[in-house]
Image 1 (cartoon, rainbow, N blue to C red):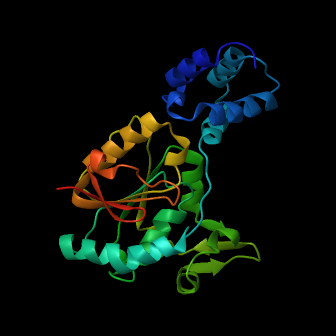
Image 2 (spheres, rainbow, N blue to C red; image 1 turned 60 degrees about the horizontal axis):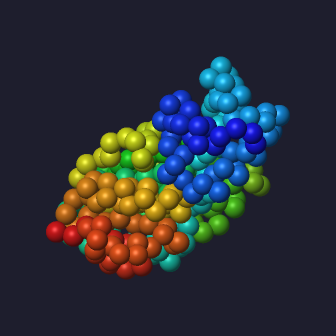
Amino acid sequence: MEDSYEVFKKDIFELTKIDLNAYKERQMKRRIDTLIGKSNITKYKDYVALLKKDAKKYEEFVNYLTINVSEFYRNPEQWKLLESTILPELFQKYGKSLKIWSAACSTGDEPYSLVMLLAKFIPLNQIEIIATDLDKQVMEKAKAGLYSVKSLKGLPEEFKQKYFEKINDTTYSISEDVKKRVKFQQHNLLKDSYPEKCDLIVCRNVMIYFTEEAKLEIYAKFNKALKDEGVLFVGSTEQIVQPKELGFISMHSFFYKKKL
């Protein structure tokens, strides 16, 4: 790819407010170069010009930057720990009206999993999950609530039976009652303000794409967004190396409590 990637990053920030410096460069540059090549363009500046005049290409680019690999109850053993230990502790401390944020929620598998799990403890109509993502397109998919058999592979059978309708051999539709409990909003983890006084923040399998500096910034913001002794639930490859320095106490693997 001709011309400067550094200039391209600045142009993209001005255009989209997405800071490519926050992502691991080799991985992100390779993805972007592949996308640009599909448009038969050889210069970054020409691609930026295309994004400015072509709304479809702009949407395609923003969506492509967001890496969406999601499934219900990903790493089931961690969800079992959430059910058996973390949620009961939170209920005991804060009552049943928890403020829960699913950050970088992708196609909705995670916030909908939270709704179904919470419904084992409290009435469905008393649950509300804040779910955010940078990518508007994946949130539209989430709102549609249609999922493949593959994405449901880790889901407890009781939830599949109770909250899903089989559409055909490859597709299931999630219950409208579950969908109503999730409030979707577009959000940039690096740029936008965070919800306040959260009891539980779930952000899994997205931090691996950020640089170490960006991770530290996001973890600090998560800490500030939590109530005292609120909990952060991270992905299975995202353990925080020195949680105390970031204001957290390690509770269990992948679960961190905000220090008093």
